[in-house]
Structure formats: C-alpha cells, structure tokens
Length: 60
Image (cartoon, rainbow, N blue to C red; front, side):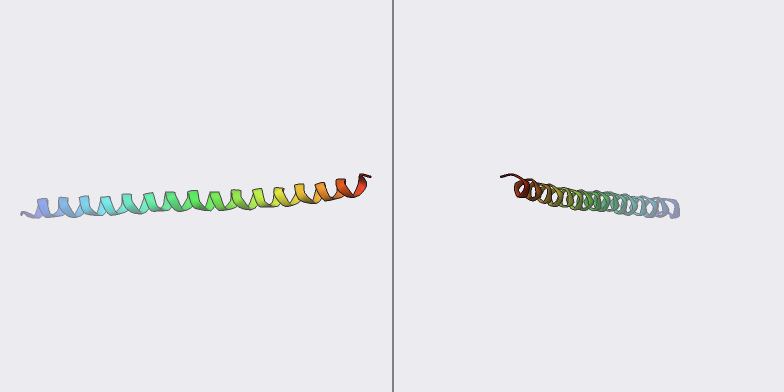
C-alpha cells in the first residue's frame, strides 16, 4: 500500500473511533438525563405522599 493509501486508512479508522466515542458520550448523556428525571419523579412522589398524609390527618 502506498503512503497516501495508508494515511487514508488511518484517518478512516480514526474517524470511526471518534464516531463510536461520540455515540457512547451521547448515550451516557441520555442516561444522566434519565437519572435526573428519576430523581425528580422520586421527589415529587415523596411530596405527594406527604401531602396525602396531611390531608388524611385533617379529615375526620
């Protein structure tokens, strides 16, 4: 293989690795977002449960 062909193959392989890393980063960001959403849902569930307890305490 000539120098230019070898260089082209290296660039192509490097580009593929970069694309794979970017895809992994995108997936990690989605997972972090899902974790934040789960935390928000948990906080809201706790707040709803606390409000329900207060209402039950007030009702006869």
